[in-house]
Length: 113
Image 1 (cartoon, helix red, strand yellow):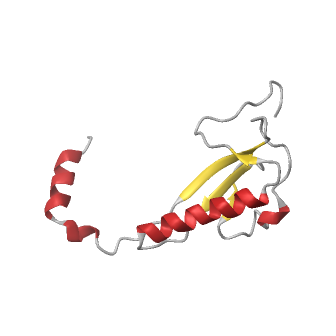
Image 2 (cartoon, rainbow, N blue to C red):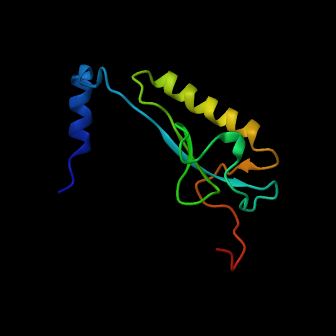
Image 3 (tube, rainbow, N blue to C red):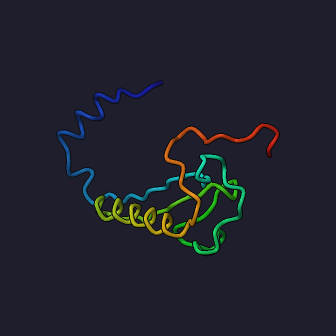
């Protein structure tokens, strides 16, 4: 059964205190690409630290896939600022590579795995 979202939203409007103190965190994934928009085939940049142990910048299922993770925070603006700063830091450390800005993947040559 699909819950009635309208009823839930109406209830929240009447009870805004229900969301006070809520903690949030963000995760964002992006591909590393070359200047021409093709998938980067280089390893995880050393300048970003170890992908296996870095607290906030890691990889997911592929070396070219960066994953940014913010700490859990009760302040939305602080959390968004933290994510922005992760992006800025990473952009400065990527050298000739870029972060793919779209949700659809970049061009991957046929036959490449």
